[in-house]
Amino acid sequence: MADQEALRHSRHALLDGIDDEGVAALQAARVLIIGAGGLGCPAALYLSASGIGQLHWFDGDQVDATNLARQTLFGPDDIGQLKVVAGARALRRTSPNTEVIAEPRFVDTSLLDAAIPLADVVLDCTDQWSIRQLINARCVAHQKPLVSAAAIEWSGQLLSVDPRQSEQACYACLFDPQTEPAAHACGAYGVLSPLVGVMGCLQAAEAIKLIVRGRHPGSSLPSAGQSLTLVELKTGRWQQVSVARNPQCPVCASQRTNIAQPKS
Ligand SMILES: [Zn+2]
Image (cartoon, rainbow, N blue to C red):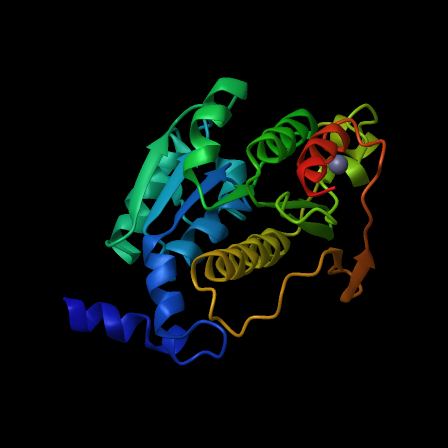
């Protein structure tokens, strides 16, 4: 079995920046994934395949027929079942060495405050503005890295936030919690099936890098910069947009002041 595991992860072990210690780091890591939809399914699939030791996975929703085109861990037999329960069953087959803690609940402040401190990295795979803002705020409060993604129609966005890096913007620095974009309020909308796969896999890749940087200090991975990645699959355009902290951010401004004080 040990040989099988070594073979499974041999291509990561050969990879510049990960190597054997990075593989061990991933096997020791715990990732919190919030959402088991179009983003959460590919993120969980690739993180577990990459040998993540433990996935803590929240979603209170059940599988329905409209999900099947994008949420590729589920099939017709799963309709009506809890997403994280059906998802954990699928992951046990593909990656039996990853422990999946499936919590069929929608997150709130108290659940996040219990789960976030235990995680190496948090993945926001939800599609609700208010929850997205709450997850960001609690990750800033607990100083935990967050990888946030969204996908609508043909367009996706990705933002990594590491509150331990004092120069990094948080999600609320870029997107004012008081100003919900119109697209989020309009209910049902179209979304290209592979788009969520692309964005969920980008989240998994960012999470892997954050874990390896955090647990394998000798890694040759370059230090993390920060930008907002915008993906538009109708035209095939990808953009990296520079981001900056908002000194008046309602979420992180006071936290960062508190962190900076001991150094000055
Ligand atoms: Zn902020």
